[in-house]
Amino acid sequence: MQNIRRPRLSAADTVAEQLRRSILDGAFPPGELLPSEIELAERFQYSRLTIREAIKTLSSQGLVRVQQGMGTEVQDYRLSGSLDLLPALLRVRRGEDGRLSGGRDGLLRDLLEIRRILAASMIELACERATPADLRALRAEAEAQRERVDDPAAFAEGDLRFTRIVLGCCKNLAVELTFNTVVRAVDTIQKLVESMILHMQENLAYYELVIHMIEGGDGAAAREAASAGLREMDEYLLASIDEESSHHRKDEAI
Image (cartoon, rainbow, N blue to C red; front, side, top):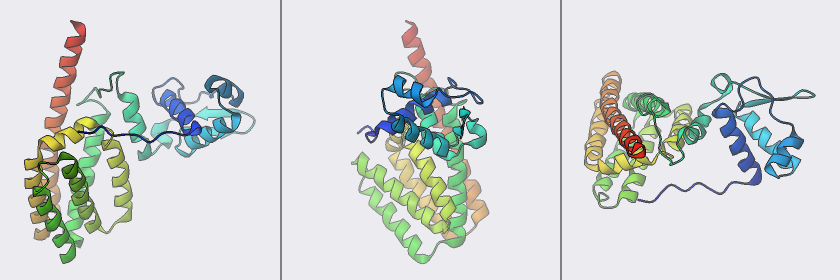
């Protein structure tokens, strides 16, 4: 399986990423002022213009507030941030070896929970708004997935297409944009991608269940059934991550 590649960052994005990490991991707590532009330029060996662009990025994400004549104040991201911070938070929470710890008690649990809530709500809306054309598209994609079980990369792409067709059934732009943010965060977690690939047959059965629920048109029942099924899958995944983390800690102790 191919690892997910992140695009090469510009100078301003590189500075913003390092400052963002420092803010999110608590090195710069809320209420504290960032070093001045001159100090940051010297620290990162970039121009003040680059530093200014980086600060502008952090400001747009709700991480800092620029106060003329006073400096750049760090904000409490829990009060001023948005879902767009999820991928960055996940990068911060990883260990030096790239492992994501804290399965049941950490950010991964939170991410799976919001994904589950969103997915269940999507299916509920799809029950109410899906057209015959939408259902034909879902069936066609589900059938095509059966031909991709020997090609993990193609199966993963098909899984996303199936989900986006369900998303299109909702006829709700706000849901689509929220979904995009969650997907960007999920795509940074290799373990989630691997889990989906290891359970392709279960995914095929899930596609059929989703289509059956949407065809049934009972949104409330579909939401409950989808939430229960996804919760079971998420609990299994969290348990496997916690077990892997436990084994890794024991290996390090030896």
